[in-house]
Length: 151
Image 1 (spheres, helix red, strand yellow):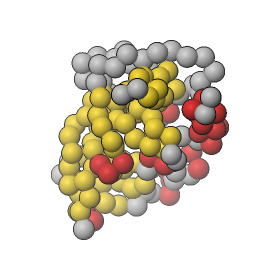
Image 2 (cartoon, one colour):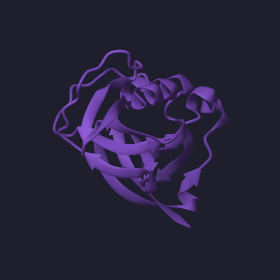
Image 3 (tube, one colour):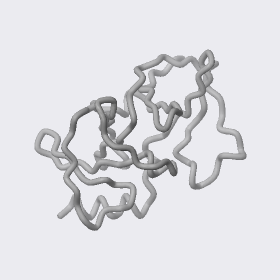
Image 4 (tube, helix red, strand yellow):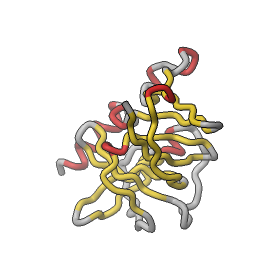
């Protein structure tokens, strides 16, 4: 069985998100800063009439912030029912992965803080960390965003 992954880059490393979990990919967005947001949330964007939080995967993974440029993309996805825009350095494309390309996460990097890493793919000479969008935000971030959404 194969699965399609939207592959994107952060800090030179490649990550994949199941294409079924990506609603759209946006670019050139205007981020509105807001107070009382979790550290990893840069602000919100207005997308077709909805305010959507912009989530920095660079911050989540411990990389330095990067200025938005023409390569920056925003993957619109739902995390436990909340729509968010994941800010990534660029989108490399969509690839088909076969089961034989996908491996379990080694125990040394699997813990509560990395539960968002679903599996690892090795395609040719590319190592791609496959993410589970439902685990990208921690409970505190989800609670804060749900409160904001319900106002």
